[in-house]
Picture 1 (tube, helix red, strand yellow):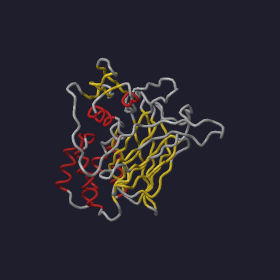
Picture 2 (tube, rainbow, N blue to C red):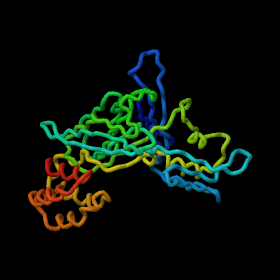
Picture 3 (cartoon, rainbow, N blue to C red):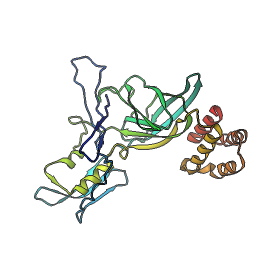
Picture 4 (cartoon, rainbow, N blue to C red):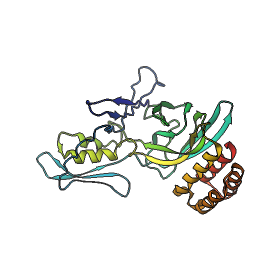
Length: 320
């Protein structure tokens, strides 16, 4: 499944950025058909603010308890109003374990990705938002690094996607499956970053395929421009993904260690995953001003930490 990113400039006063995820394979025989799938493309408008779109009285867009999209106010051409239900790609349950090694060329981040057993979709693509420069990245067999997006410094976004036919289950991150071998190299020290995970939906012609998203563009369905725009917002790349906190490249060598340590502790205080340590972190920040004091306090936090808390504290102790 080869993923590609296309940037399209449209009009004289604004630019639209479109992202299409196209699945294909180069691993099969030349006479074997490639399969393709797309994640819905939703334009972003930059520059001059566009006028507000008119909203019809019955227009409504919302997410149900399962996280799927419900669109009300559309009509079949010449018929009564309909309710559109669209399954989103958020039915994955990613768990990320990261180990960080330092060396002469900087830091190596190795990721093991697990899709928890209660997931409903397999993981099709994921990306990491690094706040430090990325030197290189690599993926295991049946996966690939298909882009390192550097257009919004200091943010650098590393995309990993499947590199196999949708019918090929080798190393697929189905519910309950794990896969290691996702690697990012950087000069930047570790810190808390965001990772985005997108679930798979069956392709046209495959078992389980539902043309729910296609309804939004159907000539047989009428809806206001406002309603279509609001629906597309929930199906855009970032909104149609599961976001979790993990460890990744964050602080370039130019950032002093004490400043980076304090910044990470301040960010942890604001993160719900660190609620159990919030009082202890605040006390440490109020008392510790030098590197030795901060490191000693972080070692105390690590003794009772698990999960992302343990990952962060271990990284701060080892690499600062």
